[in-house]
Image (spheres, rainbow, N blue to C red):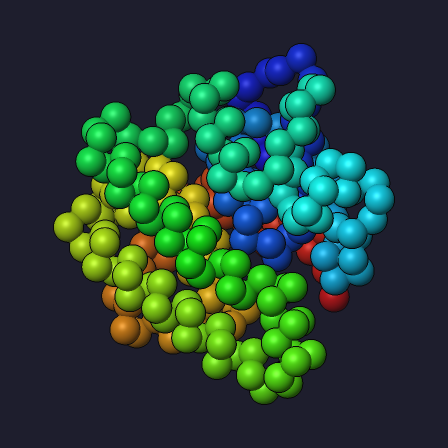
Length: 221
């Protein structure tokens, strides 16, 4: 969370260490050089459903960003707001084709993978079907999304998803791949491009600093 940017009032990020949506925004803030204030929201304890947090985000999800008097929820909205207001370290390439690929990759993660593995969905599956049904469900939908991403990026990837700089697609891919491996023990063998990107992401300081284990609310034991 080191900073090269000064603002009148420090940005506040309501986040949960394991949340991949929060992870995306943490990367964006790090890339843009913000020293932000981390406001932990413990999803396992249900703090996202508290009256205090629901005032910030009525749907009860993290992340939420406070910039002065403005409150923004939803990781995509937050990242695009940061991109529009704070131009340092652009998160979108100038080339329109590569920009479109970035939007597509980000949307595959944010619309077709992550929502199907979030805490509410997994709790519902456990309640209605049984705990043994959760992992096959997650594996199926991660695999479907990863297969699509492999095809989408094969003619565009460089060191990172769409070239040799970290852009929007990488902000969504890095947390999704990390979570698939660490949380769901997902086998990356059928997805060599994404596996290679994962190795590259783990060398980027802005991503390293945003990892779940490097957050203030990460469990100490």
